[in-house]
Image 1 (tube, rainbow, N blue to C red):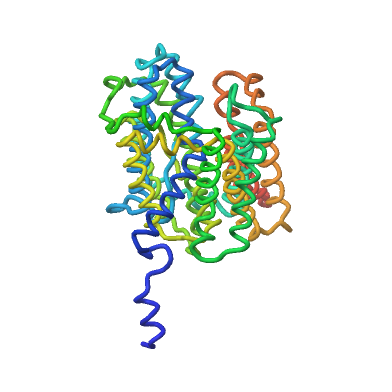
Image 2 (cartoon, one colour; image 1 turned 45 degrees about the vertical axis):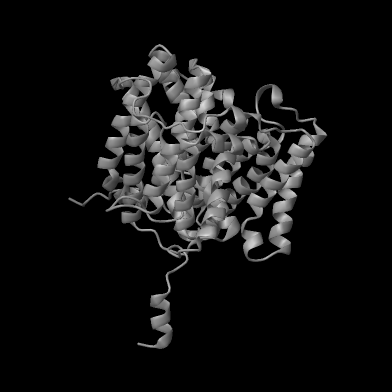
Length: 452
C-alpha cells in the first residue's frame, strides 16, 4: 500500500472531520442563527396566535421547539444504530405543517385543548414514518436529479419572499417597505456577507454570516433600534416537560391530515439529503434516505411528546453549508447542542431573538438564494435536450411560483385541497414528482396485435 493511500485512509473526509471545539462552537452558532433566520421559531408564534394560546403557553412552545430541534439534529447528524443519515443536516420545524395544525387545533376547540389533538396526530405519524422508512428508501429512484434539483430550486425561490418580508421589518405593524433604515440594515448585512467572502479566506470567510448578524445587531443596539430587555425578563431556566398541555387525543381525521404533511416533509428531506450529498461529494444511496426518514420519524414522535411540531431537514442550513464550505457533520451536531441549551435557558434564546428582523432578512437573502443555487447546480447535470425534463422543471416551477405569488388561490378550491395549495413548496414538489412519473415511468408501450 502506498504512503499516499495510507495517509488518505488515515485522514477523515470533510464530513467526519472533528474540528477544534472553538471552531465547532462558532460554526455551530452560525448555523443556529441560520435556523432562526429560516423562521423556525416563527412557526410556534403563528400557531399560538391562530389558536388562541396565552403568552406563557407560547413561551413553552418556543422552549420545546428549540430543545426538540436540537435533539432531532443530533439524531440526524450523529445518528444511533440505523437512525440518522450522518451528514451535515440540521432539523427544523416544517412550514408545511402550519396550516394543517391550525385547522386540526381549531376543529378540536382551539387553545391548549386543540393542541392535544395535534400532538396525538404527530405522535402516530412519527411512529408510522419510522416504520415506513425502508419504503421511502426504496422510492428514492423516483427522485432523480430532475426532481430533487427542481425541489431545491423551488424551496430557495419560495423562501426568498419570506426573507424579503423580514428585511422590511417582519410581519404586522413592524413591516415598513418604505423605511430607509430597514433597507440599509438588510442590504448592509447582505453586502458584508458578499464582501467577506470576496476579500477574506479561511476562518473569516466561513463565519461571514455570523459576523454580519452580530455587527448588524451591535449597530442597531447603539442607535436604539433594538434592546435586550427581554433577556432580563426571561427566566434563567425553563425545561420542556412531556405533555405540557395534557394527554394527547387521537383523532383519525387529524392523523390522516398530518400524514399528508409527513409525505411532504419526506420529499423535502429527500431533496436535502441529495443536495448536501452533492455538496460533500458523496453519492446518496437508498439506505441514506431510509436512515434520514427513521431520524425524521423518531424526531416527530419525540416532538409530539415534548410539545413541538413535525420536522424536516432544513434547506436553509443546506444553503449555509454550501455558502461557507464547512462540511463537517460535527458542526451541525454542535448546533444541535446549542439549540438544546437555548431551549433549557430562555435568557440565551431571548438574546438571539434580539437580532433585528431586517438584519435576519439580509442574511436570509443570501442563504435562501444559495438553496436555489444548490438546486440549479443539481439541475446542471440534467439532460435538457430531453424535452420531458424541461417540462418537469417548467411545470413545477410555474405552479410553485403561482401559489407563492398568489397564496389566496387556495380559497378557490375545496377545503380538502387547500392544504396542497397552501404552500408553493408543497405543490411544486408534488408536481415535480407526478410529472417525473408521468414522463419517465408511466410510459407503457403500445401493444401490437398478433396475427391470427
